[in-house]
Image: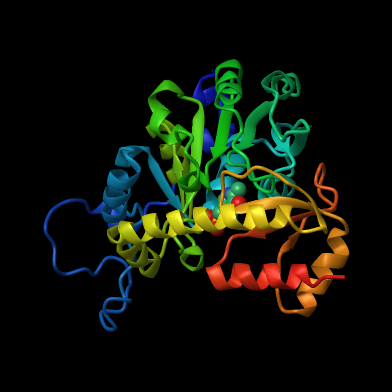
Length: 345
Ligand SMILES: *Cc1c(COP(=O)(O)O)cnc(C)c1O
């Protein structure tokens, strides 16, 4: 691996981050806060939230088994995806490599940051060839994006291939494990110590059932986390989000129950799809959704929309011709979808 100084944009390496009123006082018990131009009325909304979300990180550290100092929290994974571009990639000079097809935000953030995006096609089983990924890199490649379980294909990427990329690349490898709660593969966040160049992404939006609160996580070395903290907006995670996330973390049993139920329903749905005459193929899934190849994805999609049922049409995505992506819903939602598909003509 190159040093972090070699990888980081020089302006970011030199950056003096914004220092808030509350950053400058530290530690001692205080009860009169006249430092931040806040309104003294309208508690508790009048006070700025903790910029480093320390209480929340303590709880996340326990549940995710990652030390607090290795955690960054952002306004959704969206923020955790965008910041590495702003930290590492010089616009118009550096590039990133990513598996293809995958989650669309990696490319959108590359484009908004004016960074070249190099997609590398998965094989016909939607698996990654580490050698192909490494061959697409050059001296200006700063980031490699791997999503596992992958969206929209649903499958885990082989762990050995990911390790080969981690060991063979001198820049940063980002492994997006947004769906790892649904998978039985060992999550990479537990192996941060072996991989100084990894950033692992998690989210509250999927298994945790909190897409509305916008909370994403990045796990990495404390040096990489320090760079994230330097560049983020000072109060990027608001107080309501921090409170609601703390509540969610204290009801872990619900989440485990949801995951179990969703996985049962996934099995039922995938079997039922295989029996549909209009379904040609169901791809294996390690997530809370699956990809199905249909006889005519567009027509079926339009038909479902007419009935008020929305699935994701992925037919125009690379390697996903005629594919619909089906999220697992409640039992009755899933049954309604199947009923509609059975009467499609
Ligand atoms: C849904 C999803 C996320 C979550 O994004 P948030 O901004 O945290 O809601 C991240 N990565 C992938 C691959 C996803 O599919």
